Length: 111
Image (cartoon, rainbow, N blue to C red):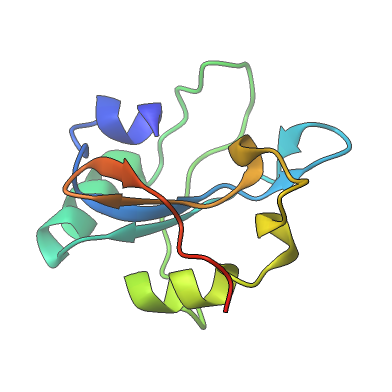
């Protein structure tokens, strides 16, 4: 979230999920970010595709891509609301987060 906000994207996303390896306490090297409109998509693509100035040393380069099969806020929420990652035993830092007008909101309960 800090990386997005530092690049002028605060308030331009409404869903973020950074999948992690719970045992190694490390991310898997990719994230799912839903952007609120086409302008936000263009901004993210220009700012982050090819980004390599990570806080921790790594040779990895960010590649911005469309994800599939889930597109849009509703599809992402529906995909994860019943996912094992949302179990109460999983620490919040490993869970997807949602936002409304840049403010974090509670994730909808499982169905």
